[in-house]
Image (tube, rainbow, N blue to C red; front, side, top):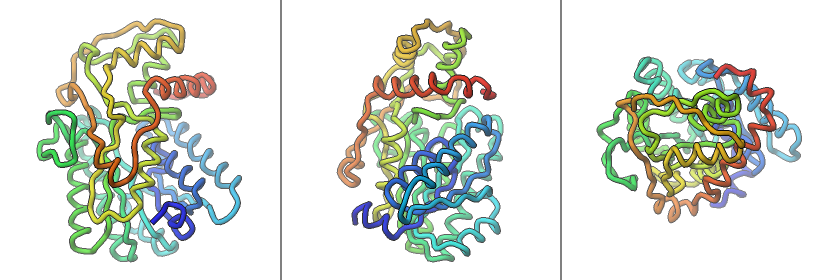
Length: 337
């Protein structure tokens, strides 16, 4: 079934719609003719004004489109079961893309309880609502952090029974719940595991935006370890396109979404320096025990089953990101990072 035909009939719930990935997924769904019901609690994990900026962008896009595409927004928390039930009762929901989550490996070590509440209980609430309302498609955003210390490149069939931090442990729990509801209730489940997503309007707690702001403002950038750790940085538009492809029937499947090109952190820093025309002052910090040395996605399954592959290189993606930062510098410098 093509995305186009799906779009003529589908209303999709996007949780975490004011988050980084949820914002881009919502906009691309609207552009492709879907109706979107957005849910977000606009929490203060980072400055809510950036989430409000993204939300305003979705509303502006929705208002500019003609036809059936539309956007409804509910400022709810997915841990509030009765409120989530109200949404399913008052809307005909065809699919759910669950992007609402507490993210961040290091932060999960400091406060694991809130990760359990959002990532596991929140997912359970949504699955219960799908079961009761007859919604048959569920997409759960998951993470490359599950692969931990496995050999690279990481494959979907790798053992993920030894998560290194509460964040990845709660994502593993959410994946397991999804399988239970697939098995017991026939809900069709796709689980994209994201690898280090970056791009315009990204999370300010992530390394790339922290580097951008600090280098631009002549402040030291924090680098954990020796800077030679590698990440499979993947551009936001590629991630959003793949997430929407996950709406097609799958049964129960897990898909890696990475750039298939693991690069050193110092290489990324050097690219940012070139684009800004400034040198970074580096504050060297100990590597956190929950951090892995490298990530690298094997994406053959995503290519074969979803016809998805990344289209933007780290060099071009970083240029787009820096350009967006410079265009919005005055606003971004008012945010609490």
